[in-house]
Length: 129
Image (tube, rainbow, N blue to C red; front, side, top):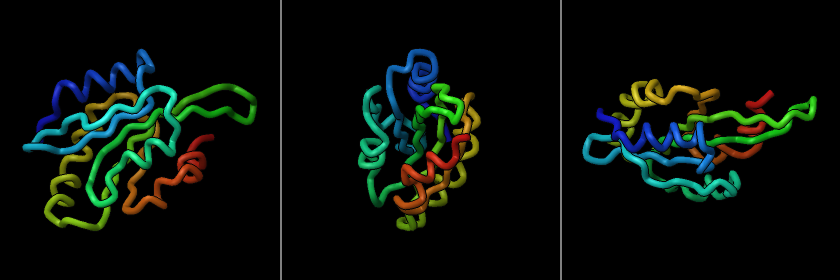
């Protein structure tokens, strides 16, 4: 499975420039491509509503939070959204996930979500210290 250069470029821009809040990726014609970029001031709810309910996607979300010691921090979440539908696409996404994720250097946390409740705000927040 190939990964488009745009995927890597947009991910590096997210890290270096913080010019987007999230990136949603999809597989199209045997290549991982960027489907959507979330603008910097979008909230986690905007991100979750941008996910197609019955389609598999990969996503990276830049989660900002304040620690117990009152420090501003952020963590990059890699989220594999894989609803139980469409068995053929399940195999394609499952077999390419680790290879794709390995090309995104700087991911802090990985989530595997088979329905929206598994990527709720509370679950993401609970994965930060």
